[in-house]
Length: 419
Ligand code: NAD
Image (cartoon, rainbow, N blue to C red):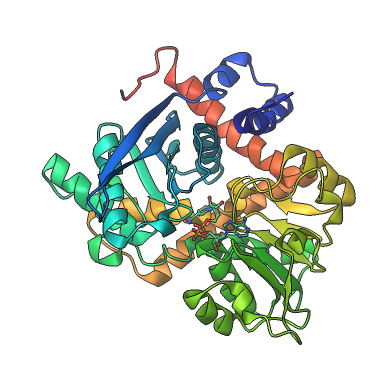
């Protein structure tokens, strides 16, 4: 039987609900997306022709505040994927106790085939199409796969011209010059890094341990730098075009420089650094495996090959529920996406706060606040997992669902909907 991605994701909610003995009202509220808007964006191409692209924005749940979540530009994006990512955002914001619900957006496009001018027109068209849904107190986008601060800047600018006033809090991950926050660039990786460092003893890790990273974009490349910076050894990395393996460790600075010009496989030299089949990165000999690309990397068919003792999910949804069970039975500890990659949305929250107060924090303040939240929520979830004998993922869902249930009840029977 074919299950949608969202159906799969919801199994984690149902599982957590059982642990909390929640009544069905709470589940009824959380098991469907509140609203998903779909449109085709029609833009002018550089050669004068017109081209259209499917686009979505989902506001999954706003019980705890305005919806928050990134915009992905990817040729394989679907509505099901957008709704699933928005569901995860709902739980991620609750895990971190941020005053947000969950949202997500996407455009079905391969942005690498567009010129910079076309990319700008597409980004502005997205904001025009969804400007009634989006807003600083309603729905606040951010970057995700194949979108970046430049795109957020164009979108913020477009929103300002639509509403007729400067409104930086409408979107996060902006360039610093347009009200972006210091520390947003590496926040996703840094949050995961702080979490690993905080739990090193419990996880049986220490600097010198080996790390393999799938995906070398925002999340993956900053994770490589941060882990290598304290002495971890990066032994394998991949991107959309291939993978490399270096049992003695990679020079991360050289790798970052090479990646700026081409694929990571350009680093292969046939002696110390080998090109490998990207599908085999899951089973590479290492202590820590970091998925930092797309969904469903580890599934029923390859979970058994995992050699790492710890998996840090910087990507959203890289492990299927079937693979989760296999990893748990092997004793592999998974630090789940809704906790491990929540540093990104947390610093996005800091950006939104700074935009609204018009007073900007130092990089040190950002790091200190991020570290404190990662450690507080990470520790609470770790203790919950140990106390109840459940996985860290189950504990993260239980932790978040408790907060969501409390908010759902506090709203009463006639919940205000910002619509
Ligand atoms: P990005 O666009 O900066 O990087 C994506 C990387 O994945 C690129 O290096 C690309 O080459 C690689 N990739 C694509 N397909 C691949 C494949 N099949 N195999 C191996 N590598 C592949 O995106 P990002 O922002 O780093 O996002 C990566 C993951 O992290 C996503 O799951 C995203 O949802 C998640 N995430 C991102 C943020 C954020 O703030 N950017 C926050 C939380 C979670």
